[in-house]
Length: 171
Image (cartoon, rainbow, N blue to C red):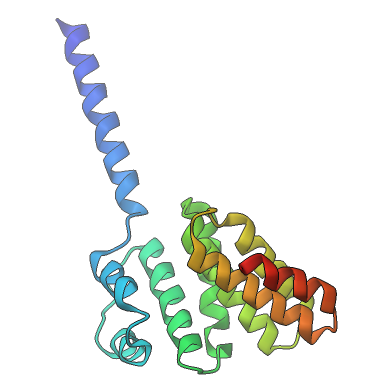
C-alpha cells in the first residue's frame, strides 16, 4: 500500500512539473490576440503595445515574445529598429532556450533587419539564413519574409545571382 501511495505521489508531482514547464513557454492570450491581428493595423497595434499592454506579470518568455512583436510592429510601420536592438538581444537569449522555433525565427528576422540598418550585411545574412532554417516548410509568410530580406541583402551587396535565386525561392 505504501508503494502505491509513493507511486501516486510521484505521478502527481511529475504531471504537475510537466504542466508548469509547459506554462512557462505558453504565450499569453493577449499577445496571441495581438499576433492574430497584427497585419490588419500595425500602427494601432504598435500604439497598443507601447501604451496599453502591461508586461509586469509576464514571465521571461512572454516578455521576449512581447519584444519581438514590438520590433515587428516598428518594422511594419517603417520606424527605425535600432531602439529594439538590445531588447532583441535579450529576447534571443531567452528564445534560444525556450524551444519555440517560430518565435526565435521571427526574432532573428528582426535582428537581421537591425544588422541591415547598422550596415553589417554579413551578420544580417546570418540572421536571415538561420531564421529560414528554423522555419517550418508550411509557414509561407515567415519563409517569404526571411527569403525577401535575404534577397535584399544580396542585392545590396551586388550578388545578383544569389538575389535572383533567393527571390525565385519565394515564388
